[in-house]
Length: 339
Image 1 (spheres, one colour):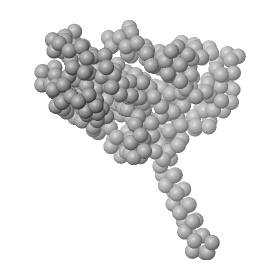
Image 2 (cartoon, one colour):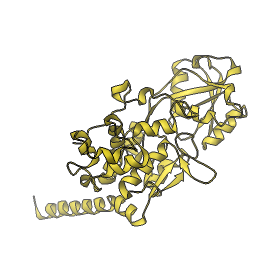
Image 3 (cartoon, helix red, strand yellow):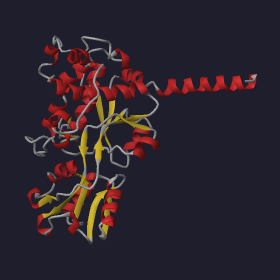
Image 4 (spheres, helix red, strand yellow):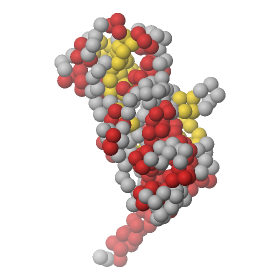
């Protein structure tokens, strides 16, 4: 290797370090401003919605609060930015938000071409169809010739195209940027069908003039693993968000709840001791306190508590755990262990 080559290698390495230093400052920036800026939906009941006082609630919101609790020991150290499906990725890429927690499907294209990383799955979903009961159909296979309302900038348009083409059916797409525009158009009769993730159908159905006049058809036509997203290039921030989610899931499996998180720190179970920071230095490994999971769980509850409070059987959405049950209870919700 000649002097010129060595110089180029060293220069490249220096540039790489500088770039890494710049991109890896998310946690420092967040601590400096004192809060996390979290991107959420413009209003999806059960997942992220604001009341008249501007107070945000929902499964996606609770995840943001859990991260804030892990970082600041304060679940209120978070501000929310409502974003349309079209705006969400640009807002994250530009640094307008630190974290996107907005019913967003993890796909290969999004994971590899947008400069973003999905931190895990908070809700396993699938795309479905909602129609008026008086339309007289019982299956999506009876929708040939239908007009279909949906959002622009989502995976739903491609899924609809694939499904109708595969079943040799004609259709007309009627797309809008904002979710509420889609709901209003469907409610006003501008289309025959409303399609989005099944969880979204149950949520948006509550906004219709006469919710009981509408039904969700049985077909699920896609895999829609929904999860939080961060920018690529900052492994520390990526790991923080990933392991807060894993902690919430592991906590449910281990019986650690918002009510007993502090008490369980005295457990003799090695898995609980590692999760709650009384054994090992797992929090320090990601730049947080070793009790980061205790703070997150105490603030929002474990994954099961979050699910039940926001979208579960005793809420207006009335969604059963299904695939989102723990792997040990017939679902596929599963987190790597803390060890």
